[in-house]
Image 1 (cartoon, rainbow, N blue to C red):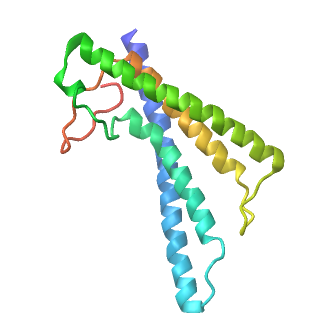
Image 2: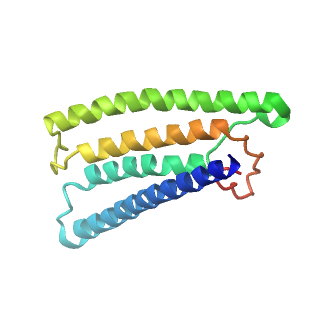
Image 3: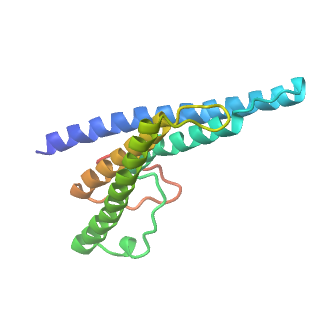
Length: 175
């Protein structure tokens, strides 16, 4: 059973790493776009009209693509004032309750994001200035939060992570 759990941990970590790499590519694309827009504005007096729209869409994508990896590696900010001062079954209870709160949030967010994705696809919605199709970005948001919810649900079944100090590196998934 532990071998199966370790295998699931490895697969989740791999999938979340791939998505995080895509999120990092979105950030790099956003930075490149902004630099090019500045060059166009000051060197040629003709900035791109779509910079703000596309940069915003790339930023949202990077957040939702990176969220599952952040959760999988326990690299997020966690307020553990009570949790860190407990042990045993009480610590486990706090861990499960915290994961349940996130899973509930993710389920509600996913439900609403899925409705938004359907609506966006149905009307073939596009951004105002550049007419960029919005569906891929809305679907990315829904998929990212769904995977983050699955990661949190899986982690709820696993032992809680050890407390990580601000200077420590986060533990790998499943530790």
